[in-house]
Image (cartoon, rainbow, N blue to C red):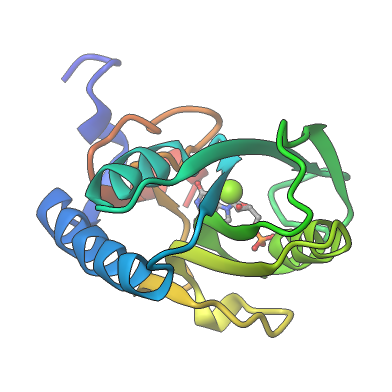
Length: 184
Ligand code: XMP
Ligand code: MG
């Protein structure tokens, strides 16, 4: 294996591409039904949610509009602090709009909790969350998530938008890291 072989850094496949595809179809069906006749804005949180947004949007039958936000946690290290800075704000005025935040993963929930407060204060008609992955054992705040793809163990995962040091985002599935990568 050369250094560009993505498989070299992985311990195992946690969720396959087929499982992701099937789950997104399921979620899209529910979203189509729940927002029938409404004008939905889906908001992707960069960079992790790029793949989920792209595939979920194409699985929807209803017409939606798409916008993006980029946020970053202040502070050092890999753990979320809950103090968040907006790197790129929405282009859209969401006052009176039906808004669905699309996330790759909810870990501690601190980032999303902040985002819900921030977007909520802009007066949307409704504000809900869709996430592909959630780690129930890592939750530090209770968040009401309308659409969850998979609840996963409290392990660091990569692929399908999720990165380790900006790498492995383009894996078509979700995997866990090999111990040699994080020094285990
Ligand atoms: P929380 O919910 O803790 O998560 O505020 C904030 C952000 O941290 C990233 N994150 C991960 N990224 N594998 C990753 O590649 C993971 O297992 C993981 N857990 C959290 C992610 O960007 C999330 O939005
Ligand atoms: Mg994210």
